[in-house]
Length: 159
Image (cartoon, rainbow, N blue to C red; front, side, top):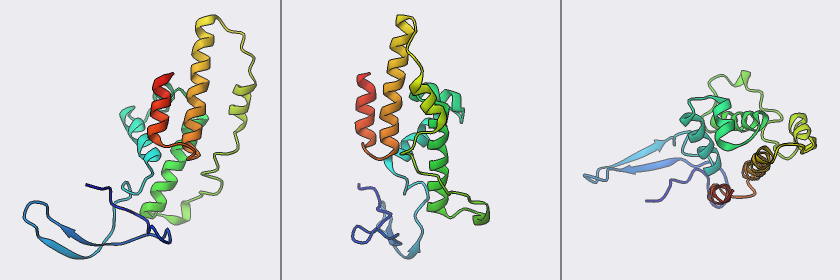
């Protein structure tokens, strides 16, 4: 079975589901049905959500599993929240401040500081740091939609 589309393939606008069918008895229902807000997440957003849930919301554990910095996890979480609010319309739109969210192209000060640190580490720790930076780069490319979740997973497995 295919994943239900959430945008029009022609104009990229939102779509409305107008018919559902029971797989067991064939009953058909017609009307205007909303899709779920999770169904319209990108594969990358859904993948991050699963990691976040698997780690019971612990940002430190997510950092460890993905091999990325706190600011990277926090940005991914903010983007996920923004996507869920857009897809399901936030309960209180007046509290939504999504300005600046989703701009993953500019590194923040903490990430620039990490990148500028000299590599004077014991051999084992240096290897760990290199792998961590490589993971971070892969996940940053994933967050910018330069690669798919499958490509990122394959690249992460090679590390």
